[in-house]
View 1 (cartoon, one colour):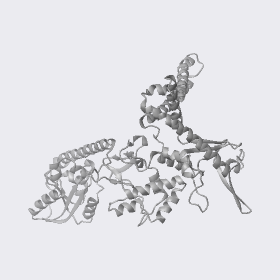
View 2 (view 1 turned 135 degrees about the vertical axis):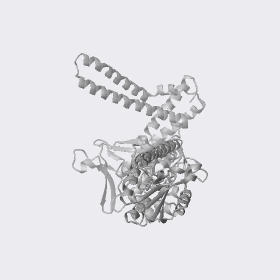
View 3 (view 1 turned 60 degrees about the horizontal axis):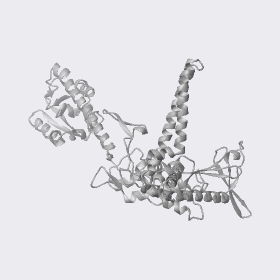
View 4 (view 1 turned 45 degrees about the horizontal axis):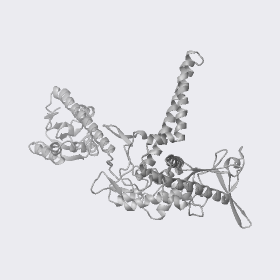
Length: 551
């Protein structure tokens, strides 16, 4: 490259957050002001150089070249406005050794651009073959390795913080804010937290996601994005659809499915492809980091679980209505298991409401299973009261647990359901053990042997998980008492009501089955917990009888 009489110089400065995190001395030497002063001092000593412009990428990684000011500089080079680029050192240009090498050895020479890296003492005008082809590539490779090493350290550090329950996101989830005393702790934002509670309450009452969004807009409540903007946060998202974003069914659903509101800190849902690529990919849920009781809950776990069940079913409101009817999404035919359809009959100014099987309604092979709404209300309320009364009666007995030394293993052995599951496990172990003998006697083929072994093993593991779930329910009662997972006050209120409402119904009933003879079966939401309370109460009663004590 021949020397020019005069050079229009582009000063390129870059500082990434990674550089700031290494150590104080290096952060200072790499600071934007330090880089600028060094390069300006160099140019003042040159007779044939003048600054055309200064390009600053502050807070941008050197792992790739997708940087706004670097792109602007390249446009000025292509336009012929710049014929010399000066940086503090090679790492300021970039840490991707392949792309940095291509720029220095091909792109800059193609545009007759002189390149100078001051502290690396490299000047493309005077550099010989060894410097250009050997020294520079090696230094670029070292810079690339440094970037990869820093990326690994940052990821590792973030992983530890997530596992410790420290919030490391840039923005708190709607409903929370970062604590003033500890920026890694989420605390409820009183205003937004109240909106979140309303959204969950409306969902339980029967509102659709779209109806909730409309209601929020009608009330003039700012969407999460607009609220963050009002708070002064520089918040950007790919969901922007207009100048002022409104609530949407999607935004409502994101809130309704966010476990963070239950006090569980969920992080690490995404990860970058690698340190050179900005693109992030979703990780499978089993790889997410979840920490229990990391912050104050806004929504109870019981309400959260109720809403998750409601989101799985169709609860659309009728024409002209915002809320679905009281039994929407939980009333099914006891024979074909299809949803029951609500019918309103009007005759001579009198209105009657009943439910029929949707299969029969579509001329399918099932009977009508007709039941009036008034009869259904009476049966459901009576059945619910009976179950709640039994539970409350048994739960009183459990108060004795606090005064008794009870061995968990003994209680688990007393549990008939756990005993049944263990017995079924033994059956599959026996079946699996007999497969080899059947194979030897050529009763089954090798392919059948492999298939049956896999089936038996899978069933065994499923039973093992079922046993674990049963034991966890007992442990939960041991640890937290009867109130674990159940609002006893809400249960006591059931005994006082004379008319069924959707909130009460959805809070306790998961599914209702109606049979042709008008029998109604209630599948309780806390069936496992109910059965364990009854079992533990029986265990306590047996213990008292054996000791000759009054219950």
